[in-house]
Length: 536
Ligand code: G6Q
Figure 1 (cartoon, rainbow, N blue to C red):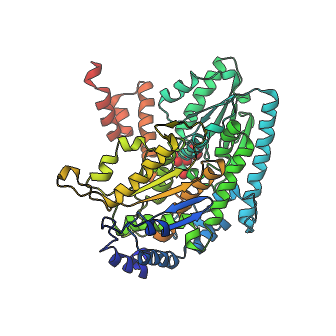
Figure 2: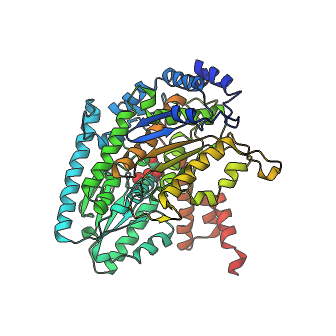
Figure 3: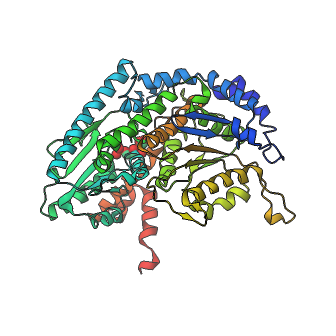
């Protein structure tokens, strides 16, 4: 039996889950409940009165966290101990030190492993500042194309979009990730290559999609009479195949201990975001993330928002059996945030063995999905309110808009309308509605939580991204799984290489039989695709 199933608190929680708090009972979702069920870290207030929890449930969830020794594990992580491992089996066997990428402020971590990586990161920032200052002086680059995929794309892109209102007037940034040739073609049409800096972001320096897109960019630069080595910058691990100053204008580094999906506060995000907004703005993002790292170390649970989110999520996942969770920011700037967190959560905690290699006997990560509100209301909210699946929702909102260009229309500003919708949805999901017409019945008891801050500033954005990174880490600590590897993406990559070999064989004119021998199942699919009657 897995450790998680063994915790004393797990048994208590199982029995409490037989009769979860009924939000639909008149008076149960009271003003006092909304006021009392709150927590706070780094300018974010968490309102969780609309979750199906009681004080007793929260106490048991906290007890479960203590049984799992989450505080010790978070301290070990931030100190740089080797926690990315599966005991007794070959595994990545590394520290997990994305927190060191922003440990430049008050009271830095004193553990030598963490210090060393933070100092190395600081050096990269010094290099970056000099690089950008030179560009400001010469005015050479005003546009940037970031080529990368997965963790080398989703986080930096979501973070960039979250603060686009701060973009310098003469700057434009584009992201290319897909090996679909249309992705890069559409971007290349929008830029003046002479003024374009291309950054190739790949920790391994070997990713098929990224290297393919880099080659396409190189060809276009050459065709425009430009030298690729004067336009392309590498962001990679020291010693990777891309660590080659002859091929690149500059190389910025990250390290093994920085997981791709946790890398947006490293050089992976720093180069594009500092180019777009200025290096000072990027440091404000880091300041917010660092503040949340410190909040994650707090033992006082109500001041440890990442732990609070993890506990509520585990309650919904393991005890109320909700298999998905929607993240719905009521902020247009966060429209790619759910996509980023989808990777952070699902790649980290979509696991079926524990850290000792044994199959788990409980559910791990829920499916994460979402969209920005209020657009989401006009799309999938029907299912959330009246469908057969219960989907916990994590709402995120801000009191102020970013551009500050709001107008009063019919007595309220747009920001007020936005927030009114956010509040209304949380209440509607919780209380539901009775009606004689079955089609107008809302069952209610659909859990949600609200995260609210004053304004989505660089500091607030950094804090939010770190909040979810640590939420996911705490879940993993409690479940006893390794949240920091991603073996599950390997098999598909290996098989894709075999199919690629079959295409190569076709180009070389090899016989059908030879092609089939490379990978018979791949050949069967290829045959079906290429025998498409539409072509005939
Ligand atoms: C993230 C994953 C994965 C990775 C991409 C890109 O945690 O490891 O999404 O970021 O596969 O890898 P490279 O940066 O090595 O190109």
